[in-house]
Image (cartoon, rainbow, N blue to C red; front, top):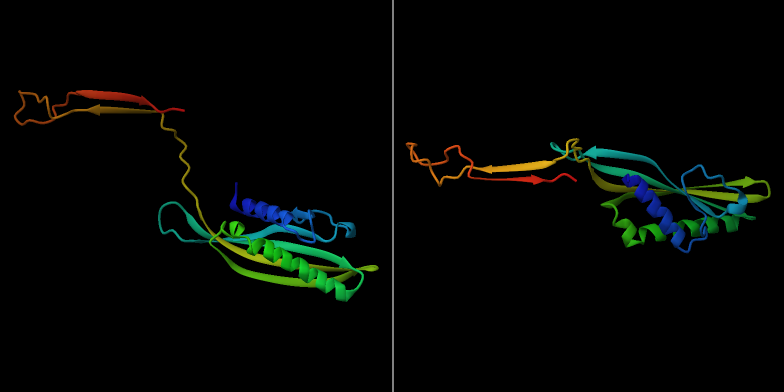
Length: 186
């Protein structure tokens, strides 16, 4: 499975398991339709990934930076409650992910973290949203794909002794004294 898929799925699982205000309303991707009845809610997606080469030769090796974005949505009847509810949900997300040693151990480091907030209105209810970006750094090695399978190994040994007495110098004489065939096909 692709690393970004694993990281995104792991983040969704951690956020669902955490005691956030969103409870089980944590969705992978941005296409989940949200209504006010589903708030508070979290959308988790990975909008970008960049890799910088760290191998001069051999298999391609990259140090990738994956942007994991968690969008948080809350609603409330008044602005003073709205900002506090959004900040509380953001803090719960940060703690659930960055405070979890198992989740953080999936990558070399958290390269950067940022949060942007926005407050709007949908008629009588006020809506607040936050976009939390986590830049996660990890190494990826693309091992070569070998299209040919090893099916059989044949070992033949021409030893020094017994040597051919008709030769001027002792040593291997071209006769096979020992051999084995090994079938390694699966």
